[in-house]
Image (cartoon, rainbow, N blue to C red; front, side, top):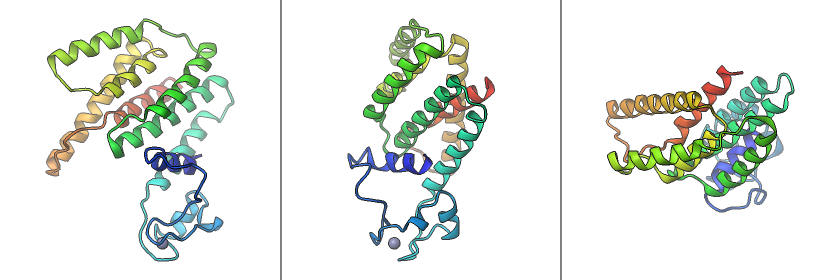
Length: 217
Ligand SMILES: [Zn+2]
């Protein structure tokens, strides 16, 4: 699943097919042998270098595979539909977060399709707070009056959807964790003299959601 999500994160924003062509080296174009596609293991054995041209490759897939593995272990130790649903929520937001990190966009095709699945299945599993998106929307337009362009419209869609499944207190906790972790990251970048033009917010929302769901676990 982690390997698949890594492919989704790269190919969907580029509007490329998920199935073809099969995985290959970014530098020399050599198709990967099945033994080079074993999650976690292959990257470690090859020390993050292509076995054909010896160029180093990104450790992105490795980390995604590791995070997915840990999430599956945490959420599927005991089978429960609610935990499956929470895992789906986390994995879909992880993909959105990685794409936001790379391209500073909320990938709407992934957001709408996974959001629809989350909402429909959520109707059977969790209480839905139908008023929350309205409150979030009003808060957003108010904050835009005070701090223009502080939050993207895509982020608003994501927070609006998530607010359906969270109590008011949980929503505040989520936004607090996301803002604090975003601020810490921003300060670290300033210290390293790499002031980012714009900060992707979904990675930090993902951290907030992860902490919240694990805490309630
Ligand atoms: Zn290569």
